[in-house]
Amino acid sequence: MTMTEIAPDIVELSGLTKQFRIRRDNSLKDRIVQLGNRSNRPRREEFTAVRDVTLSISAGTTVALMGANGSGKSTLLKLIGGIVSPTSGTVHTRGRMAALLELGAGFHPDLSGRENIYLNASILGLTRAEVDARFDDIVEFSGIRDFIDTAVKFYSSGMYVRLAFSVAIHTDPDVLLVDEVLAVGDEAFQRKCMDRIAQFRADGCTIILVSHSAQQVAELADRGIVLRDGAVVFDGEPDDAIGVLRDVLEGRDVGDGDAADGPVRLGAVEVLDETGVRSTQLRSGQPFIVRLSVAAATPLGRWAAGFSINTPLGHMVFASNSDLIGVRLPTVESSAVVDFRVENLHLGAGTYHVHANAVATDAGGVHGIAHGATFTVTTARPSLGTTTGDVTVIVDGA
Image: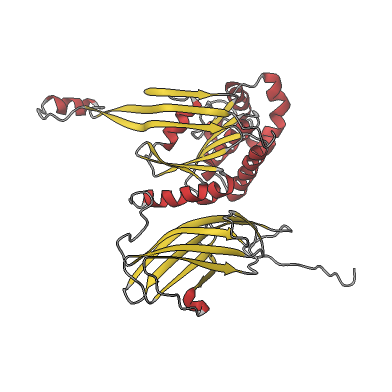
């Protein structure tokens, strides 16, 4: 595809709504009790899981659906995959679709892993000849060759997802739907799955995933969609989506931030490259800027600001603030922008999150933002750990 070509929409949703009917008298006991209950409390209620969602997804993009539990993410993914039908609205998709929506979905518990490969692959649209050609690759990727002829009802949850994921990715889908299944299995297999999804992404496959992992979103997604109570409240850059998700999870209006009525509050937290351009990809050792936007309710004479860089697991790898540097920040009347230029920080390859805070020293106010920005570091040479350096190997006596 040339730069002038525009990728076509491969998923189109228009006015999509899904309602479920919840019964309050599911058991015989409940129904008997309800017979003698003269209250006007309804026995059935309508629950709206997805509320008037309209959006389109271009071919070759990776989209993360985010939100609190019960926000409608999984239901929306099932609507896209055709697993459930909408109450109203339309869903239009193109191409072959592979869905990893529920653990072991499409598997028959009494059949062996081998038999379920053929069963599940046929459901996903492969012919027997195609499965024959890919069978060894499917088994090799799953890593459960020793149990391939065992009934899957004896599989652990990790073995289930290994096999299900392996079958799905070997169908060469145009659209891959993933619902939190990467949270199952050991760390090595999760990394293996992430690498394969990254390969799909590079090959132009469209990926729609539900994830609570900021690392997965930052590493894989081109776009983040945040849902609350079944409705879309944000659709944009993954880094911004992570910040909006933080607001949603903490019960704030989107964009309000913490301590909105305090003497000092942080707005945007941004990572810029050395030229001042916002960036989510940095090279190890490359100078970069952490920019904090600060607002003051009243003029601030004494105040400080700072940031930390953490791994996705919450380990701090670097931190600094204006007090540590020995810089007294000028008086702020209403708003200010503070840039911290970082030189010669040799981080290891991976994803990092920026936490930031501002303190109104005299007014006694403090405001912090977690996961204010996210960026990924690449290294010239492969390395492990959170720092990197040049290593020379010298062998004496060889």
